Image (tube, rainbow, N blue to C red; front, side, top):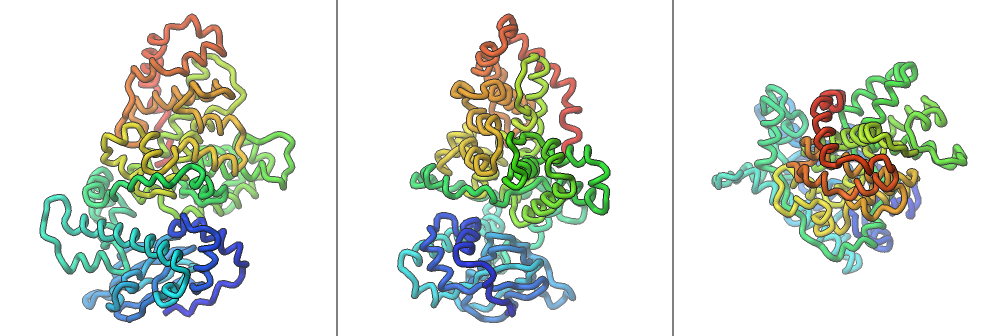
Length: 513
C-alpha cells in the first residue's frame, strides 16, 4: 500500500470546491461532500509509488482526485509488467473490492504526484443514508459502464462467445486491455495494433463506443449552471500543446512572439485562458481585452508562458470526448475553420464589425467541452451517429439538459470574455434571436454552415446548401449592411462555396491535429 500522507494543506471549504470539479462528485451538494470527506481518507502519493498491489486483499476503493496513475499486470514470462491503462483525474479504481473480497488482479502505481481519496465500505455504511444512496448510485454507474465496455470488448459485434479470462482482465482494477490502450494512445503507429489512423479509429468505434446516456429530465439548466466553473480544467489540442511545449523550452517562445500567438490562437481553451488572464483584476484594465495579441502585450510574454504551461499541464488530467481521437480532431478542426471562414465572409461582404471574428468562430462551440465533462458518453456518438444526433442542439437538451451554446455562455461569463463572444456562443444556431452583436452572430452562423457543408464538423455533415440559403443571417446582414440588399443570395452562396473549394488547402493545411 502507498504510504501517502493525509491531505491537510487546504481547509474543508477548499476541499469541497475541489471535489466539485471531479466528475465522480457531480451532483453532490456541499453538505454531502462535507459528510463524505469526514468518512474518507486523503492520500498524497509520490510518483512511482504503488497504491494497489496485485494478489493483495483489501476492501478499499479509491477515487483519483488529482494526478495520474498507471495500471499494470505482471506475467511470469515477462520481466516488465504490461501497461493495461492510464487513469487520470476523476477516475476511480479498486471498486471490485466493494462487492467482493477477491484478490487484486493488477498493480496500480502513481505516475505523477497524486491526491487520492481512500474509501472503505464499513465507513460509507455508517454515514447518512442519503449520502450512501448517492454514492452507491454513482459507484454502480461506473461499474455498469465498465461492464458494458467489457462486454463489447470481449464479444465484439459478431456475437462471439465471451472469454472468461479476458472478461476478468477487463473488469479488474485496471480497465481496458493493453491492445486497446495502445490503439487509444498511438492510433495508426506501426507495431502498435493498427497500420493507419482510420483503421485504428474504426477498430475503436467497433468495440468501445459507450452507450448513449439516459435522458435525465431532472437535470434542469438551473442545476447544471452550478456545475460550470470558470476554473474547470478543459482539454487542450495535444498537437498544439506539444508544439508550444517544445517552442517554450529555453528562450524560443520569447524570441518568436508571432509564432507563439499563432499557436495559442489554434486552441480555444488556451486562447480563453490568455484573455482571462489579461482581464483579471491584477491588470486593472478599464476596457476589456478581446484578442490574444493584445493580451500578450498587456500580460507579457513570460507570464503568458506560465499560463500556457499551467493550462497544458492541467489538461493532461482530462480526456477529450472519452478518448475518441476522431471526434476530438473534428472539434478542434471545426473551431479553427469556422473562425477563418467567418473572417473570409466579412472581407468578401465588406461589412464592418469591431469583434474579432476569428475568435468568435474559434469559441463558438466552447460549451461542447463543458458538456463533455458532464456527460462523457454523449459526443462519442458522433463516431456512429443515430437519427437523434442530426439535431445536435435538441439532442443535447434531451440527453444532458442544456445545449452547448448556453453552457459556453456560462463558462465565458465566469472567465470574463467580451460580450460578442457570449452572443455568438448563445445564438450561432439561432441568429434570429440575436439582439446585440447581430453581425458577428450572423457571420459565424453562416461560417458554421459552410464549414459543415465542406465536411469540417463533428460526425457526418447534417446541413445542405438549402440550409445556407434559408439562414436568417442574410436578413441580419442586409439590415446592417445596405449594399448587400442588392446581392442575389443564391449566387453569393454558389460563388463563395466555389471560392472555399479553391482555398480549402490554405484554410486547413496548417491546423495542428
